[in-house]
Length: 235
Image (tube, rainbow, N blue to C red):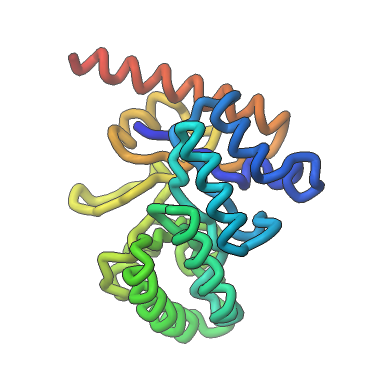
């Protein structure tokens, strides 16, 4: 199991200026010992290539994989083409393997919203292929992808190898489903996460309450221990 910490866990200190994005990457390496990071597109103070390359270099220098970018709801009709292009440019410049998004809310006419989101996602998947970035869809309450089954339905309709699901690590999936990463939180039982994730990536997302560094550190320690115990049990 490889663990990437999402900057959503540190949204408050990042938004207030208490913590810079560069400091966040440095502390993820030195304090948390993570394998990778997933940076929120909304949290970039600058989106020019020079800054994004600097952020990537710091991560690489510290032995941290710049695993992904969180792009928000990129398939929502209210999302501009410019926002989608910026998210892809950030992912490309950061060297991200994945660009994570959530589906839009159902709207007044859910079938029409679904059809429009599929249309947008098809075009986005073609752009993602050109950028060599896999778009992944996270399940989220109140959206067209409220659970793993609905996300799977959406991904199947888009029918692109450049669009995959990013379900919660404990959600039900089929044995043949290709999942580049799972989403998890500090509230998930570490042994269950380790058993499910095996050799795949786990993106650790925010959980309310307490100091975010302490919460993330405790969760990562528990996940490392559970993964080690899993491997020993199979030896």
